[in-house]
View 1 (cartoon, rainbow, N blue to C red):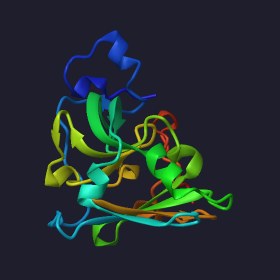
View 2: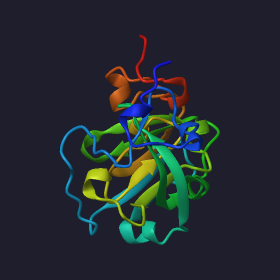
View 3: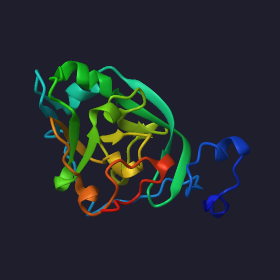
View 4: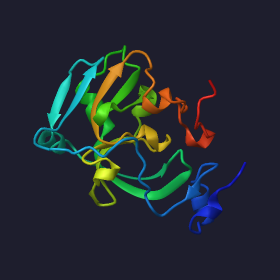
Length: 201
């Protein structure tokens, strides 16, 4: 399998073990997204949870910021082949949202809704992981607009397009619904260790 480690800065043997096949190490955090960077007014911003839940909810920015906080130290991997190691995110653990929502037994998948109609899809089994958070800070500072200010999902075990920027809500559904990039041929599962970059169908 081809290695791309030589394209980036020097990495230790320990770091190499944390970089999936076909990826290269970068110290930078590249900016990649479709469309323009949305303008956000925190006075009118809200975050919604709905669908197959017992307790649909809506949070203002102040209400969201008042939720219990969690820090996450992790590596991230982009389908465009870069990996950034040892990132620090801070935000709200996904379990906090799931517990408040009270998922129905019919909830099997989530559709992540973001600004400008963007969506990303995940099985509940992937979403409900200890390292998944709704982050508003990265490396000790608030997210920049390019990286999803004020809120983005972080799903480290999947290629980073699943970690949608500018998140505005979570819709829990009984059946899978391909997200934006999946409809354009990206792999539905997006596991970087299996190099699930593009769909074969």
